[in-house]
Length: 419
Ligand code: GLU
Image 1 (cartoon, rainbow, N blue to C red):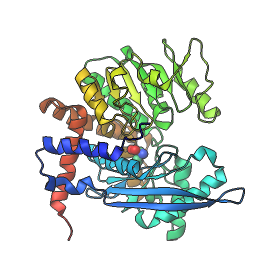
Image 2 (cartoon, helix red, strand yellow):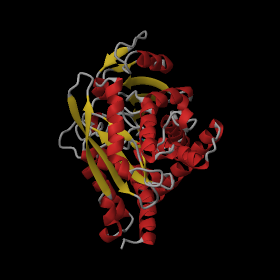
Image 3 (tube, rainbow, N blue to C red):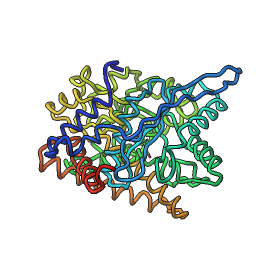
Image 4 (tube, rainbow, N blue to C red):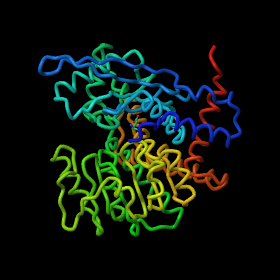
């Protein structure tokens, strides 16, 4: 990854552009250029061999203007405060785009969780939770899964918070296992939202999913579910890849088989075999001659260095921040349609919201109800953005930022600046 790239500066540049397009003065939105609160914690863990390791952890709350702060926690060796600040801000814009009553937050630990034993991982999660506990709570800040975190980790967070409070508090975290207040449909929600978004776009531009070839970068929860669900809609998935390996097959890859293989082989696609499948590089995966490219991994994958090599006509951003501003400018000139992250991958936080509401009501909804409501919200948000995109003749990213910023600024204006 490009070392000079600063995701928070990238976010600010897009934000400032949107503010200009909305006719805002600096004073109208200056508070939104700064995260409300940034917490950096040290997380000591006594490792299995007896030595103590200290990990750096973060929780950033970008905005609580529209409601409690909301956003996932990621474990990654490259995680750092600027990344978490950007991810927190993107959560603010994302929640505003889909109009759910949350602000934005994000957390992270600088760690490669694959190098920890289960015991070490559990101790790290519990200590991290204890360290950020003063800023958490169902009315304050509600974590969820993100890169390299899952339902099991959310269960440990829920338990740690509950033990310290003295009673069960399921609504402190979303993406939990079903048995302790998780929601049906949450696990697949981000990928399902990406699928709805792609279908919404294809309908607008009169394209049939059955004629679409697709490459998906990233094969974690989001990438794998997206690939599976869009394949069910008739798209041909010709390229997939993860941190270990990228694969190409002209006639389409069997995604169900690849998912099964990765689950049984340390969450890695390396070594996956099919007739006529070719091993390619990550750069080649991104540059495949496909109709749709779906980056579902990390930030800054499509950047100033490779933007001119991207051949996909449509990019649906399943990851957060996969396209740097420099690349946006190049792709815009080429006429590439980019459906921005803050719309395309919002399905996860929408069903997180449903989970939180169910926890507050102590009443469980059925899966059809959840998926139908997700579909409705994704459609409404898509249409709201499409309208701005056409009427103001701006990119879909700019349209999404205009929609989000307008909503947050109106809320801010009503609340005023304390004291
Ligand atoms: N980590 C996911 C995201 O980036 C989900 C966040 C949530 O559900 O709070 O949108």
